[in-house]
Structures are given as structure tokens and as C-alpha cells.
Image 1 (tube, helix red, strand yellow):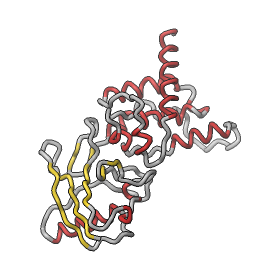
Image 2 (cartoon, one colour):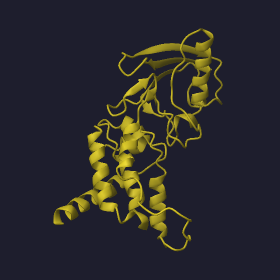
Image 3 (cartoon, rainbow, N blue to C red):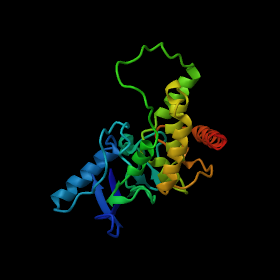
Length: 250
């Protein structure tokens, strides 16, 4: 395969960026997208040019760090797929690909295709955990949990925090990410003691980070590589309203 790549190049947070075209030949359809980017970087290094900076870690669709906009789509054209799981057979020979970092104010570009997504970490620090004593694992049957609650919690826990929901949303809202983290714990007995404080604190941090508000466009669900449902946003809204009313009554 022969491809024309238009890649966003930006030296630093403060530098101006631009799309730079590259021609890449001999690409195997069986390569992953990141392997194709490796091939491009090898070509650039041989020419004495600076390679393209991009995030990656597990390359197995687990870590969520392979955040790229490919032809205007978060993680590319395949549904339920991270960039590292995307293969070049998804594109035609001779295709032109436009590769950019996430475009959202709370995710500033560090260099080339690398974004600073630490805003997600700060949201988690505000309540995306349970305050329990450490020690030996409890007996698996000591806290019976209904099957439907287990399934719903696991569906939410599948979120890998990649930020595709933010990149796809016209409002740059992180509500799908936030709702997955809140809804996951809201289904489980361990999450109940801090449930009201958790949702208020995490929503407040979401807003402080500069993410937009959800207007039910649902682009987030379409772009999510783990198929997280927007139903969790409804759960988040219910919990937030209930906790706010509870706080006022107190």
C-alpha cells in the first residue's frame, strides 16, 4: 500500500502547529495503525528528520493512550476500536490520511500528536475511588450483588479514559468518561457511603477543568472504543440531582 499522510506537527505547547504531508510506500494491510506510524518514524530518522511524537503503551486496546483523530474520527473509522487495534486494511491503497491530536481546550497539545490528559486524573482524584481499609480480599460471597448491577458496573468500568468522547463531542464534554466512573461505583455496595459526595465533587472538578456540558448529541457513545452507553450519563444526572437535594435538605 502507498499512502499520503498529513500529520499534525507541533514542537511544543506554545509553538504554532501545522499539517505536514508525508508519502509512505510499502505499507502492509496487516500492520496496525501504530506500526504504520513506526514505519513513518523509521523513514524520518533515516532522513535525519525528527520523528513524529505520539502516545502509546500497551498496544492492546487497554491503556487508552493511543489518542489520535484519523480523518476527523476519534481512533479512526472502525467502531469499538482503539487506534492501536486499527489495521491498515481499513484503508484503501493510495488513501490520504489526516492525523491529528485530540482537539479540546482541557487537552492541550504537548508535542505533535501527544496531548496532556491529566485533567482526567484530577477528576478521578476528586472521588473516583472508594475509601475502604486495605487488607486481605473479602470472601466473594460476602456482599451479594444482583447480576444486572454487576453487568452494569462492569460495562461502566470498561472505560479506559482515552478521551475519545471529549474529542468527538462538539462541546468538548467529558460527561461520558465522568458518568462511567460515577456509575461504576454507584452500582456497588462499596460505593454507597461516598456516593453523594463523590458525584458533586467530580462534576465540580469536570467543570473547573473547562470541559463543556452535555447536550445529548451522543457523538461520545459513537466514538467510544469500549462502547460505553450514554445511559450512564442519565445515571450521573440522577445521582447529581439527588445528592444536591440531599445537601440542601441537610
